[in-house]
Every structure is written in C-alpha cells, then in structure tokens.
Length: 349
Image (spheres, rainbow, N blue to C red):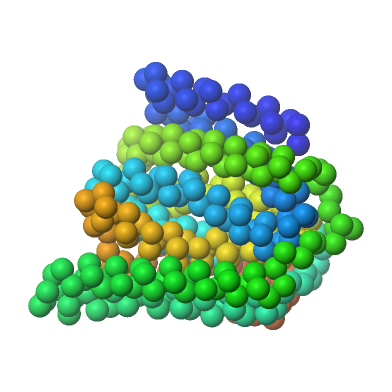
C-alpha cells in the first residue's frame, strides 16, 4: 500500500498544471494518477468504518461520498449548459456500477475465493429497485413526444414530479434497509485492514473523498481538449469517460471488498451506488438545474434507455440467487464492453 501512496505527488502536479496554464495532457495524466492513491485511502477508511458500524452504513457512506465527484462534475456541466453531457454521465455512472464494478467484483472475488455468498434478501430488493429506476427514468422519455405536442412545459413538470417520487422511494428504501438488521458489525475474523478509531476513519474518508472530487473535476476539465483530436463524441465521453474518472475511488473500493470476501459491502457499494445515482443523484440534479436556470429533464434517448434496461436485467439476475462466481463477473464485464463499443460508434452529440 505504501508504494501506491507515492502517487500522491501527482496531485500538486495536476493542480499546478490546471491552474497555472500547463498542457491539458499533463493535467489529464497527473489527475488520473493522483486519484489512485486517494481511492486506496478511501478503501482503507471504508473497511475500518464498516467494521465498526456494519456493512450497510459503510457501503452507504462510501457510495454517497463516492458520488460527490459525480455531483461536482455535473454541477459544472449544468452551469455550462451541457445538459446532454450530464444525462449521458448519469447513464454511464449507472452502467459502470451495475456492469463494470459489479462484474469486476464478481470476477476478482470469484478467482480468489470461488463461489461467494451475500444477503439474498437485499439482492432481491435491489433487483426490484433497479427495475423501478429504469421505469422511472423511462416514463418521461416515452411520454415526452406526445406531451410536447400539446404543452412543452409539461415535460419539465413531469420530470419534476417523477424526480420527487424517485427521491421519496429512495429515502424509504434506505429506511427499510436500515430498520432490518442495519448497524450490525461484520465479524472481526474477516477484518484484514487497519484498526482505526471511528473519528479517524470518518475524517480520512471525508478528506480523501474531497480530494478525489477535486481531482476528478480537474481531470474532466482536460478530457475534451485531450480527446478532441481523436474524434470521440461528447456523448461517448459523457457515458464512458466521465463516470470512470468520477467514480474511480468507489469502483476500486468495491473490488477490494470482494477480493477480501466481503461481498455484502461490495454489493452495497456497487449496486447501492448505481441505485443512488438513478433514484437520488439524477432527481437532485433536476431540481438543482432548475435553480441554476438550465432546467434538466429526465428525457433520455432510446439508446440510453435500452442500455439501462439491459444492465438492470442482467445485474438483477446475477444477484438474485445470493451467490456469485467469476464467470458471472465475466458476463457482466462483456455486456459493459459491448455497450461501450456501441456508444463509441454511435454518432450522437
């Protein structure tokens, strides 16, 4: 772990390059390398925290703080009027968590431990919530054309109403989860990380998350100038690149948890974070964009809806039996790679 922390030197390099007129390429590479040790620190802090407060609180806090980078990135994008980029990043974040992170966790955990087990009841609830989130995100998109023909403002009102209901459902789901066995510490026999006080774990998690969010914003600011000459579309950048760099920390934490055979924590971070983006982050952005004067509607293109539907189905099926293995991880990763290639060639935006 100590040698990974040597990469912290790239954080000031990225900041100097970003704010003192350095090249976009240097900013991009330095910021990306600077995120790696921050993700490792978040992994240590999250494991120490989950050991004391239970996997649900640990995964909830990590998923929430991990999405801080996503919120910051989309905040600047909304302010710049890049609403399609924001919606693409929402789609990409959900796909990344359900396919890339969950698949990577199943693969790494399965190769190290064989068949792994996790809470089947939570998995069933999450599968239902995944389908619900796709329906909620799809309704404004499916009805938008018919509604706009008679009242253009009605689409915005529909998005606001759906966003409010999504936040309500997400809040109630957390109440349900935490009232059914939450807060139970994980067995100490499986703990292999550092033994830290609760204050130290929370402080480090907050500090690492804050710097991760900052580095993510710096990195994304350099993405478009670096990749422009490659001919990549803004849509592909939003769906694939921004979610990968914005959520790098929690992605690594989820895979690390699976490698240590802590699948409840791993799924809580990956699937829980995907649900949080769909049912909480996206609706919050709808209301935030209204305050900022650039209203964001929950109208996604058919390709995004098809990808979200496919991801929710295969992720839900893979988790329903309460067991995972490396082959299921391969299946999820293959679906992600296929979708990424399709979005790369899609001439949108």
